[in-house]
Length: 249
Length: 249
Image (tube, rainbow over all chains, first blue to last red; front, side, top):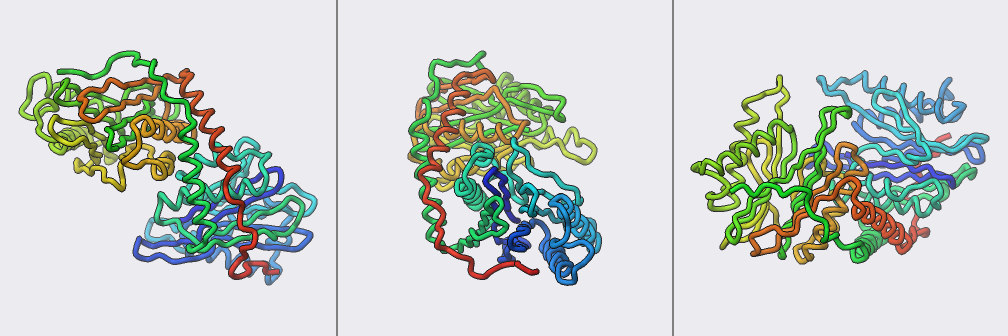
């Protein structure tokens, strides 16, 4: 499994991805799921991938090849982020069609985000079927992979006005929650913060399993949550049931 | 869908359940998923249910009927909590066998917990197949239904030494996270706190959709989380990638 999240705020974009892949619990490997393309001062793109590893590797290899041979459509020349999402969707569907896996398709999902000079920054989630959705002000984040464990903290915290740093922390806490609850999501954790109109991704981090920072963050968050519980309103004892239940004898 | 959780701590047991059932998003109803049986000073039992409503209603109706007609096996005479879990598993499998739903079985899961005089308190999760698991000191809670959204907060917070009140608050926050992320889980929310060796469940609450307390809890938790983020260690800027990625031109 995998967990990747992209957050779009006014100040830019944050991307967080894990690096664990597995085919059964006894066949676990480490692969980065974050691919970046940068054309300094003109475009910065980040692709996150989830799903069948053969499919995602095939798609990313194709994306790289198309850039190299200056194909008609490639990450360097497509005009908009939406065109890029369409393009990745097309390649993904094509690759999935090649190997049908005896009925169970080798599906993959992608997130692509970034900024092209003169345009707004943005992010798109590309479904296995090749179609895509983008963020809105009400839903400023996209998730692929094992998304449920890490969703509540994003639902509560992410709003367009956050700083990049806070958004990245939310992404990391969301990742930490997912790792704790699901073995198939694991480090190294990659984080990329893209600052609006910078056209480069200077703030990239890769946190290994042994990372002292990840350990600190995990411990600090646990500590803060325990404090938070101490400050919640006590259960309203006066409230009673509308109707007594059960009690059959 | 449904979300129910049972928490076993040294001080007793907490049960939290929602009341929404749905058959598609345009067919939503309200049913309690918490059934209690009390024999004051001798036994207190709580059953939570999740899954196909016809199955869970059929199982609970059978449980009530067996008590009434003093069947050979019923909630009033079975000797241990484990026997009770076996018994509910048997009825559940039998009911599921009656209606096979054209290939898709009408599955149901249950949690049963409580205390029988002279024995330890406990809780069991009964799978649709009729077998069951119980809690441990490392895993002091059980969940049925839409469990992923609400699991991280329980994983972080629940330990056997908590007070009943704190455990119930954790259960409510876990429920709040689930409701926020999944439309098919909704109020009224029922909470029951069972205090060790009390053999009664005097602390029962039912929070309606309009509940001022639920609103306050939701707002307070959001507030506390935002504060918590302000106190996290900032991302370790000095850390760099092991290897530069992408950047193909």
